[in-house]
Length: 298
Image (cartoon, rainbow, N blue to C red):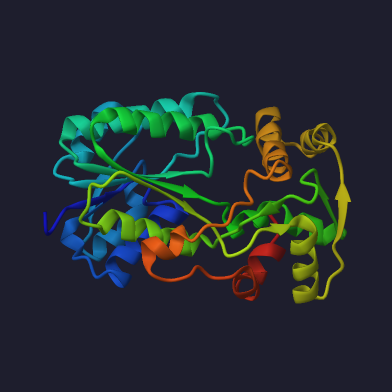
């Protein structure tokens, strides 16, 4: 198959949109070979203007997926953001996998997370279940086990910088942060590859950094003090609920620190370079370009 039709789900999201951009600009895939889907196709007007085929796809409405996936050879299944209803996201993904089978898709690339079978991250079972669904589907597959986005620091650092204290239950555990832009590039490469070889890539940054090391780098870059305040997971969850987080979301965010403390997010691999042929940006290179993200009020 020399010219497969490539489909990206969740193309209105940060990652999905960046993947389409890399297909167009980095890999020079003709726009007529790219299908971008979203629950809100009107949000993809810029891609439609560039010649990309835009379709509506709602994982909660299976009938829309048959139409959306028609004619696609390779699909990037970007994991959905349904985190507040346990089990919903896995159900959505299974629906999408089944739709891909029925539409005659040949290969699915999926955005997972590191070590989903053993990770302490609250939604790791969603990813494990999706990987298992793909493995059982008969489709070709590629699992992209994406390490934590460096951009995820925007959830905690703005308030921490404002107070001068970063409250964390991660202990000295490290996170191999990688820029979302790099993960988008890797996903575009995996999607455009003319291959159905079933492979798993754990895509990480170049080093694992603890909260204390991140705080020191951010403090130096911004000229602002940032102290680490260590708490227990229960104390962290209680604090998040006290700041208005829904209990389910408080537990999800707390699980990130539990997973970090357990070493679940600290693995560093060379898989990114093996897939893309280049190294990912270092955290030290990412930081100065993203100062605004880490200081913005949310």
